[in-house]
Image (cartoon, rainbow, N blue to C red; front, top):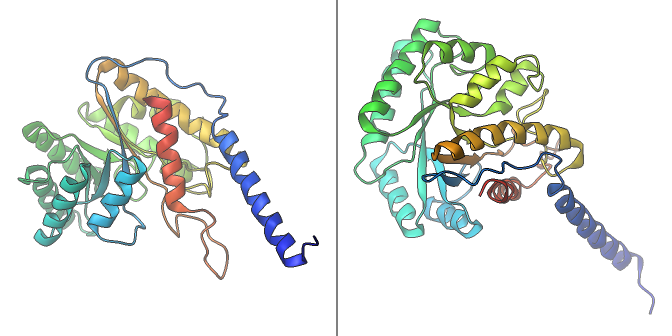
Length: 313
């Protein structure tokens, strides 16, 4: 029986896609970096969370999707509106998921920014129904004076102490800890400062994988209580697909950093929270003109979740 050209091309395309997916799966399980071997002291708990960044749908739809994939919880911006708070509370309870909140500010004047930031953090740490695992801060601005940015850290240190909720400042571009050498100054000055380790930003800021700043990186790894597991590279905050073999060395470097954090918390018997945070366009590289994403954001994040659960559980 003769196969026409159209059917042949369709069959060939399907075979190529299957082989590509198979090769990606083979690569994904072939990292040279061995996982941590410590089984974890009593009290260790690994929780991997989903981001709603780029998700089109309401609170219940997002929580249902995250639960179906096997996530332990979600990380979202603190919902300031009571209607939104009630919707998220209901969805989290219905799908039995935990939550971490993002809090931040956008004002360009330090005093106004700090005032707004304090309101958000106080509300997120004291809400009667929504009990967060942690607060992740997009705090301050890179162009604020050091003394102004210090006020954010002083406030969150006390707020965490009084509420018992861990509060982490993210190593995020445009924020207080936007660069490794700047973060080092704040970490050395503030022994209680804990961070969300999103090293993808630093790779971009410093246009390197940070081999020339080992002291700053080591201090950050020691103070990290939460990880944003996005893979950055010297020319951008997000590789197009962490499963692609051309990024193998870059992914392995990130795994080494994350392994250090997880191993330390395992030995201490502490909770480890990780957010899979590959983002949509324009974080996700796209084709020109059509702006079609080069990878499926949701699928990439699910892949990262499965990889990290297998590696650290």
